[in-house]
Length: 256
Image 1 (cartoon, rainbow, N blue to C red):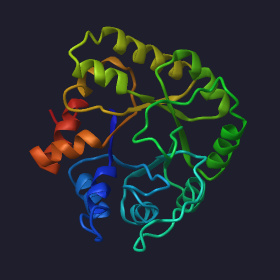
Image 2: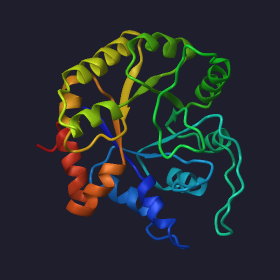
Image 3: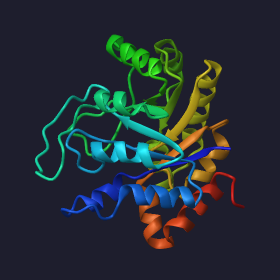
Image 4: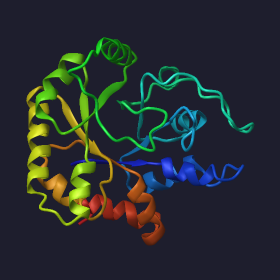
């Protein structure tokens, strides 16, 4: 079965619109877990626009499922612009302290609104390789955020990654626009197969939702985990959090 990891960035975004700890990121993580989520994902950025460094520490201490921290491994420290928020220590400093079950490395810049591409491993990856070695020495499973490109899966394996997370926005956009999704699904299936032939596990995420998830997971073989946040937050407003978790699990073939 495919694990459902809930991304809580948008809960943190709502909280950050006030000088408050409400809504609580930890409380919403616990609610998701109680409703049947298999894991929790957070993506702290240096400007701490949503998830803050302290959220990562709090989640590590207070949840009993896998914590996946994703972000740019080259992001350094940044001073907070808010007096009520601690400074960002840098991504690797944060991960070294917490040692989450999984770390998903993402090539996003500080200026990006959201992640919009995977790593190009055909470029110089010497520094990335050393980061992967360090993370694995810490006992952290390493996943690389990758576009659907079968030719790069062998490169991900050579770098030492344990998994890849397939960036699924192109598929989600095709569904949203009413396009024929056959080619998109074949591209992701072929990439997953190439990854698995290299011994890599396969995760997926970005703009997956209740309208497109089932077809994706039925086509992409042996998918280990999906990470869903933006759509899940919207669905929770409409359906209620517990029902939204149940509906996503149903799309994954659970809770029939």
